[in-house]
Image: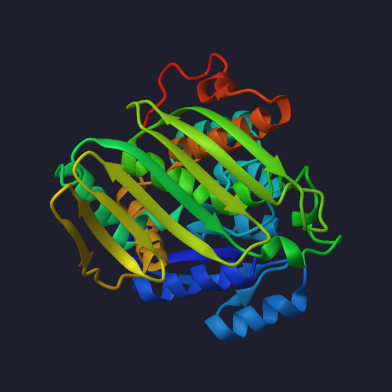
Length: 344
């Protein structure tokens, strides 16, 4: 990095989420988007004008530029493995949106390649960074809920109703599990952050209303290493829903994106519901700030390849469960490659 004032980043993908990350980079004060690339030149030019960067002719040109420190990948799922590998081989630090890849083997491979190349690999699981989730984690760790017995989580949208045949999300191969791999995986990561690793899953998945090939309604039973049992609902054809309810022996806590965070204590002689104040925070800015700091210091990001591949494995195990009609052990997807796996 030398004495550069800013970490220099390239945005690969200039759509909605590419713009969100670019806004986070601007807010960080530690990095700048210096160039961008996407297949459609007009989209790149609009992005470049908005964020004050150049337009590159190709991803390969970006990777060959010694002045660029890292790349932000907001590209179709099927491209992640190849793009991360190419960046690592050229010594570029990588931030890739979830899922890290489409298979556990590919997730493990790019994690290893980035480590061997000495480059940072960060993955876009920013929802665990929400202030309410941090507070919920502190409640659990402080034993405010007693012993946690169960968890109920829902993350759903109507996105599946609006897919077109020419979009990559239409395809079962590129978007396996539909809502589970696109949005449910966020809750998987957050639940592992809150409660530890998920060891076994059983899932029901149905194609009900979406015109695309994927299942659009999913419910998955989760068994955690700690003994906690929970459910994850993730639909792609319903009104937007985002909530997590953690159920303990002495209290329950619920976070709803619209209603906030509350703790409930309901005993035989009294019922108390307390709303907990939550400060505003910007998870995407925090994510981009951390990425820039890790590039400068060599430190490891909170969500790297290991955590992201584990979340992917839970999703893929749920898909297999729905296909085969039986519960699946998550670690079976890793084969013999899990000996030194970093959990949690």
